[in-house]
Length: 144
Image (cartoon, rainbow, N blue to C red; front, side, top):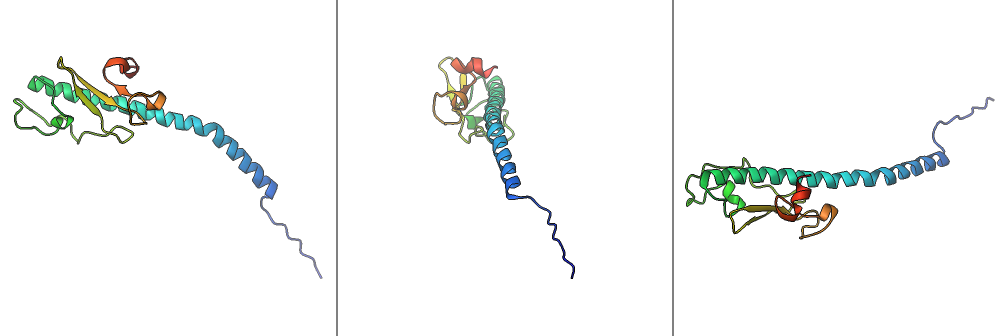
């Protein structure tokens, strides 16, 4: 009788464990760096959206002589605004990249401010939680 030797091809348990450890180390090293970039990209997206909204607001002001009372005024005329030539936005006013509405404030001297409250959705904060604005204290970080 002939003996047949089974030569199975595959990975041993030790080889599988080594591969798992290597993958775990790579994930631990690369993961945080990639998640940091996601946060930064959301901040950049908020800055870009604020810039576009600011342009639409300035166009509205050039047409009507004043800023709208709400951001919705960029899409729909309230009827009592003379020389309204909108809509000034092609789509409804977007939410910020974290899913929160932008804060729109009119100042006493006719200026306007747009604010995203950052990842935490509340005023103040640092890093991803920092507020992003087109005016005031945050203007320096906004323009960078």
